[in-house]
Amino acid sequence: MEKLRYERPVVKKLNTGMMNKFGTRTEYNPVTHIDGVSVKGLIEKYGSPLFVISERTIRQTYQDCKRAFTNRYPRVQMAWSYKTNYINAVCNVFHQEGSWAEVVSGFEYNKALQNGVPGNKIIFNGPDKTDNDLKLAIDHNSLIHIDHLDELYRLMEITKEVNKRPRVAIRVNMDTGVYPMWDRFGFNYETGQAWDAINKIILNDQMDLVGLHCHIGTFMLTANAYAIAASKLADLAYHIHAKFNKKISYIDLGGGFASKNTLRGSYLQGNVSSPSFDDYAEAICSALLNAEYSKQELPLLILETGRALIDDAGSLCGTVLANKRLSDGRRATIMDFGVNILFTSFWYEHKLSPAQEFSHYTEDGVVYGPLCMNIDVIRENITLPPMKKGDNVVVHSVGAYNMTQWMQFIAMRPNVVMIDMDSKVHLIRNKETLEYINNIEEMPAYLKEFNLS
Amino acid sequence: MKIKKNIAISESGFIFNPTTGDSFSTNPIGFEIIHLLKEDKNKDEIKQTILNRYAVDESTFEKDFYDFSTLLQNSQIAED
Image 1 (cartoon, rainbow over the protein chains, first blue to last red):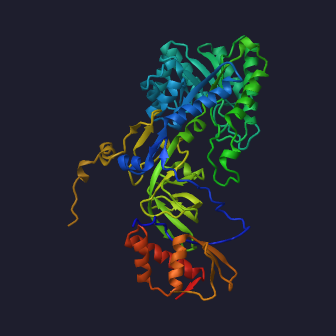
Image 2 (spheres, chains in turn blue, orange; image 1 turned 30 degrees about the vertical axis):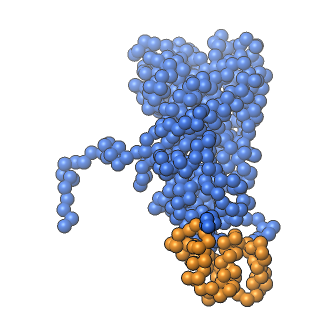
Image 3 (tube, chains in turn blue, yellow; image 1 turned 90 degrees about the vertical axis):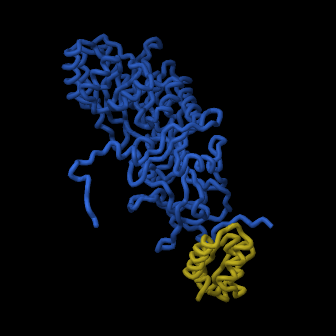
C-alpha cells in the first residue's frame, strides 16, 4: 500500500477576530513550475539557491509599459537601467525590445558597449565619471548627464583637450511634493542652480545641451510626483528656448516606478498600493501634452525605469535547511539563501511559495537565511504551511537589484538561469567558485608559510 | 505524556481547552497523534504507527514529534 504524504504535525492557537502581525494565509497553491519548467528539476540541475529569470515576463512587462506611454504620447524611448540588473543576457532582452542603455559608471558604460549598444544610444548618469569615462563617452557621442558643477567644469576642460562637442543634459532635482525630497542628484530647480548650469553650458558654447533629466526618487507610490517633475522640466525647456532659441530635444524622467513588491511595514500589499504603468503614463504624458509645446515640437520622452520592468521576471528558488522553535514559540525556518544574495529582503516583505504540495494548515513564523549573522532575516513575520528540511521554495519578484547588489559573503553567489520564450533553460551566469575568488587575491611571500604543529 | 482529560477535540481537528478558554487547530497528522496519545500509546508506538502510514523517515518524525509534544505541553493540551 502506498504511504500517505507526510506533513509535519502542527497545532496552532486560534485568535478569532484578533489583529496580528502575521496577517492571513497567503499561499493556496504550490509553485511547482516557472514558465513551464519544473522548480525541482531546475534545482536538481543547477543547484540551490538558484536565480531564475523569465524572458517571457521581461518582454511582456516591457511591452505593457511601452504601450501605456506610446498610447498617450507620440515620442517615447526606454533606456534600460543597467544598475537594476546588468547580467548581459537580461540587458540584451531589453535591447532587443528597443531599449537604449542607461549607465551610472565606467564599468556599466563598458558593459553596454561590449553588449553592442551604439555609443549614441547610451545615457551616462551618475556622479562618478572619471576623465577616461568622460573621454570615452565623448568619443562615442553618448548622452552625458551632468550631475554637479565639478563635473561640468571638468567636462569643459576635457572638451577643449579633445576638441569635440559632447551632447549633454543636466540632471535637475526639484520639489515634487514627496518626502523625502531627493535633492542629491543634479542641480536644484527651485533655487536656480539648474538655470546657473544651463547658462554656463550654453554661454560657454563647447557642448550641445540636448536634454533635461531628473530622478525624483525610488519606489514612487504616487504618480502625481512625475506629473509635477514633467511640468517643471517642460517649463525649463520652454524657457531655454525662449531665452536662447535653443531647442531641448528630450526630457528624461529617470526611473523610480514602483514594482508590485510589498514594502516592509506597508499596510497594503504592493499589488494594491503601487501605481500601474497606466497611472504613471497618464500623469507624465498629460503633463507634457499640456505644456507649451506645439504638436511638432514635442520632445522625446525618455524613461529609465528599471525595478518595475524586471522585478516580476526574477525568482529565487531555494531549499529549507532546517526548522527550529524560537523561545517565544514561533517557528523559525532556515533557508539556504540569505540577505547576501537577497538584498531586497531589507526593503520588501517578499512573497514565498512552497514548491511542493501542502495542506491548508499553516504556522506563523520567521524565515532566516543561512548566514551566521543576526541581520540575516528574509521574512520577520510570515504565515506558511509546514515545510521540512529539503523542501523547496520560490521567492517571487526578485529581479531588480539582487543580481547587482548581492554580496559574496561566506558562500559563493549562485547560478542564474534564464527561461526563454520556448521554455528552454539557459545558464546566463555561472556560480562563483573558490578559484574565482582566490584568483583576485595576492599572498605576500612572507605570509605563505606557517606552522601550527 | 498524556492529553489532559478535559480537552475537547472535534473530528475536524478543532481543540478546546475549557480550563483556559483557548482553542486550537491541528492538521490531520497532529489530530492522529493526539488521538494516539489519548489512547495512552507511548512514543515508540506512535512513531511506529506514523512510520507505517506516512512517507517519512524515522529521524524526521522524531524531530517533529519532539517539537509537537513541546507545543502540546506549552499550550496546556498535554501534560507529563
